[in-house]
Amino acid sequence: MLPGSSSLEASPALVLNADFRPLSYFPLSLWSWQTSIKAVFLERVNILSEYDRSVRSPSIELKLPSVISLKRYIKPASHPAFTKFNLFLRDMFRCQYCGASDVLTFDHVVPKALGGRTTWSNVTTACASCNIRKGGRMLKAARMTPRNAPIRPTNYQLMKNGRRFPPNFLHESWRDYLYWDTELEA
Ligand SMILES: [Zn+2]
Image 1: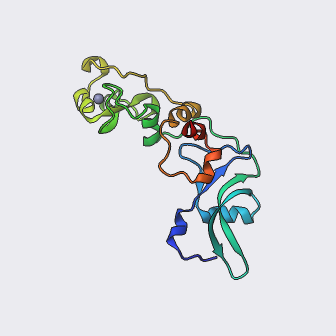
Image 2: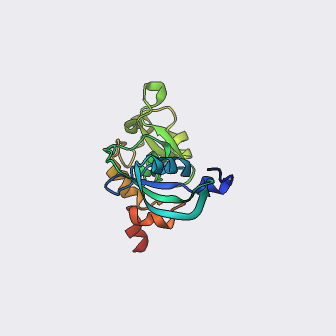
Image 3: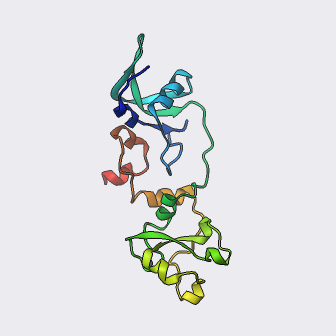
């Protein structure tokens, strides 16, 4: 199976769990077409929707799957990964000190130099100027307070926030399976 076209690289399949919910939201569970087709041949997934594009081998032509579901249920993780995007999403892409949404970066609430760790509960979203203003000081010394205490979010919390920040690319066949669908329609 050698399509030899780079446009095929951009045909990921949305991967759903056996209960037809995305395997993960952040990041959204997407598999490359190669991985998806391999899983189809290994009979590990069902195809729920397809792209118009297909791949050909000498004996077979197969449409690329756009939505697949696992045959066997996998217990989803209850907490999202600690990533840059997820942290911004937890804080709704706003500086937690002044509310600005431009030039966002991160602030260690307890500065690294004072033993603060890079964890959900010690990192908050801050704009560049608040970050500089706070410098290497503790909150009290800087007379600054984050609007929301930094906590480790659950998947549910991030999903709630994610409704307001859908990803840039959503294939139309994915919409029925994604939580923000109703929001887009409203
Ligand atoms: Zn700020």
